[in-house]
Amino acid sequence: MDGSFEVQVFQVPFRMSETMVNVGFALKIDGMIIFISNGNFAVDGTGSASLPANLNAEGDMETTEGLTLKSSDCRFRFNVQLHRTKKHSPGFYHNAQVQMADDFFAPEGICGEKKLQHTGCER
Image (tube, rainbow, N blue to C red; front, top):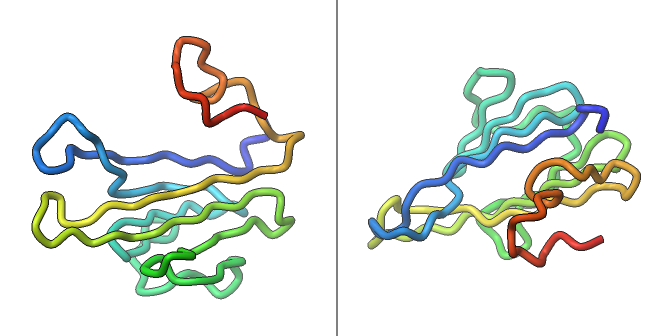
């Protein structure tokens, strides 16, 4: 792990239940820290209506395909979709996918945790 790409997720209960949903992400990509939540962005701590022009981004998070952010060398990709839930707290949630080149896959973190029963992280 070289530390050039990191993702943190922020979760809250959905419909006041034990089910947790993603409501925000903090990403370190190409030396920038990007925060995404409910269709809003902050870049390096400053709120923004859009992403920087020098960031490799395509799509729209409110579509089925979502918004994809890619590192400048295309070795890391982060895709996020926004789903609005007018009737249920918190009013929205995000789905996300992370892709990375095999040589950057690390045994640390959720995918490296042997105690978890999750099967979605096999290589």
